[in-house]
Image 1: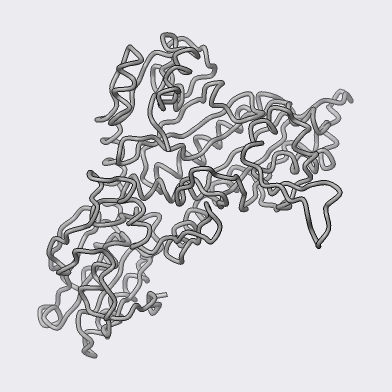
Image 2 (image 1 turned 90 degrees about the vertical axis):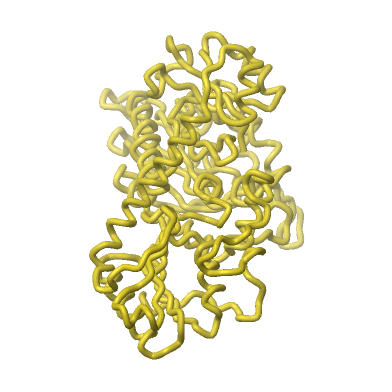
Length: 493
C-alpha cells in the first residue's frame, strides 16, 4: 500500500553505514569489497537490516527487509513450479532415523550434518528421530502408499520448509545450520519422463527465475560424479560468479533413478499389469539465493535489488514536513501504484532526510523520488537511480509514465553486468597450475577429457572444485563422458 511506512529509527541514532555525510554526496563506506569482501558482505547484511545471527551457532534471524526479498523469491518461484505441474504439500520436520538408513549412499552423504533427537517429553525415545536435512526418505515413505497404478503418475510434489544441516563453517544466508527452501519430489513411470522433468525444472523454473528475476547470470551444467547429490544418478546445477570471482551453487535438480524407489518399495502397476519401480527426481533452491543476490549485485554503497524482485521498487521521500510536500509525495505514490509499481511513501520527516536517503540506498531500492518545497515550485521531483547511478530533476506529472521503463532498463543492466563479470574473469586453462591461478580471481575452463577424476581430486586438495561440466557449445551435457565436455573450475562458497 502507498501509505505504508518503513520502520522508524530515531533521528539521533548513528547513520546506517559509517562515513555518511550527505544525502547526495559520495559517502565513504567502511570495508570496501576490494579490501575485504567477506567483511563487506557481513557489514551489508547487518547495516541493510537483512539478518542477524541467531542464538544457536549457525542459525540466523531474517529481519523484515531480508524476509521481504525471500517472500518475493517464493512468489516468483512458486508460480513457475506450479506452471510446471507440481502441487504444494507439507511433510513432517522429524524423520525416523531408520528411514535414512534405507538408502546407503544417501545416509552416508548426510551423516556428518545430521541433528538427531534422542529425548522427548522427558524420556528417551525408542527410536531417535532426525531433524530433516532433506525429505527424500520421508516423502518416499508416502509415495509408496500413494502410487499404486500408472494412473497415479506422474506424481509431482513441492514443499516450502525449513531444513537443518549442522554446519561447521556457517555464513549468513550462504551456509546456515537451519535454512529455508523449497524441495520438489516427483515420481514417473519411465526414466525418460523423470530425466526430462528434472531438466525442465533446471532450465524452465530455476534458469528462468534466476536470469529474468534475480538478474543473475548462471551457468547451467552437470555435476561430476564426485559432486553429485548423495543417492542421485545425475545432478544438474546452476552456478554463478560472485563479486569476488568465487562460485556459488544457486540451485540443483537431481535425477534419482530408482534408488529410493527400491529402498522404499515404490512401485506401480503398468499397462501390462506388471509391477514396476518408479523413476524419481528431487530439486531445491534456498535462502542461499539471498546471499547470492547480495554478492552479485551489491556494491560499496550497499545492496542493489533487481526491480522485478524488489518488494519496494520505488520510494518517494518528502524532504520537508510541509503539508504541501507531504500531499505531493502521497499523490505521486498513488499514481505510481496505479501504474503497477510497488511503492513506499517515506514521509517520516521527524527523521533527517539525509539519514533516510542513505538508508534506502543501503537497502538497494531501485529508484528514489525526492520532493521538497523547491521541487513543488518547479513542478519537478528529483529522480535518483540506485542501479544505473545518477540523479536528475524530472517533471512530476511524467513519473507514472516513465518509471516502469526505467525499472526495466535497470533490470537489464544488472543482468548484463553479472554476465560481463563472468565472461571477463573466466579463462581457458590447460594445466592444474593454470587452473589454480585462474581460481584466485575468477573461473577456469578446462577440457574434462584432459582433467578427469584424478585431476579433479588434485585440484580439490588445493581448494578448487569442478563446479560443473558444460558441452562445447555451452549446453548441458547428456553424459559425463560426452565428447568435448568442458569443466568449469573455481573456488566456491
